[in-house]
Length: 145
Length: 108
Image (cartoon, rainbow over all chains, first blue to last red; front, side):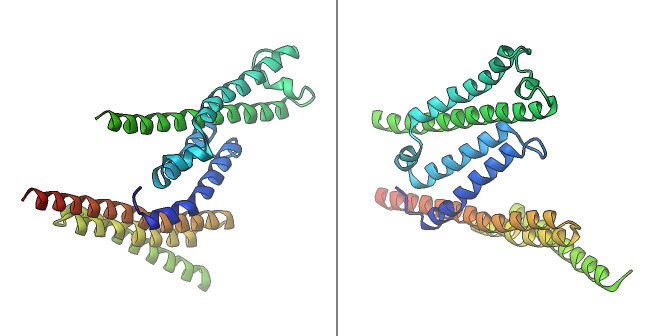
């Protein structure tokens, strides 16, 4: 492990703010630039930064690889459940009006929020999984040599 | 024009022009300086000096407190992360150089 005291201190300082900014982009996405995809990537960037500076073992203790694989599926399940709910109540697939029949505009607001949350969870899971895959690959290829 | 808005405008544009000058100086230095360390120094002029002055000027231009604080937070975080990134690059280059030197002396 490289001794990088400055980077470690800065990383400890910044990771919380990066995750906070990811949540802001996620849940403020319908009023300002942003949305699920960008939020997921920023969320993943916080963990990738932590992993690059603190080492793979430490970040895998916070977010183990099996959990990122489950997150990928969980986001798609959230997205699909919103759609399936709307056609069980008698609307079209992913018709957000179903979430609040009295006020369709509110329903659309909630629907987009939920769907974007699903997108964000999936994107974060995929990007962190790709990072884990690459880092583990370099580790095993070194052991082969 | 009232006195205070004029003063704010003057300070704002002085900061913006100063920041732009530092950006141009840093860019010229990054292209023209001789070795890696001098170029890194020029790059860090951009990300600390130029960025801080430009954001200060833009803070004074903002007529909304929300925009003012957003710019101030951007400036604060860039002020923390920019020098850290420069430090990381310099440290990596230094350790790489010393590793090369040690392997060279081992070969000799």
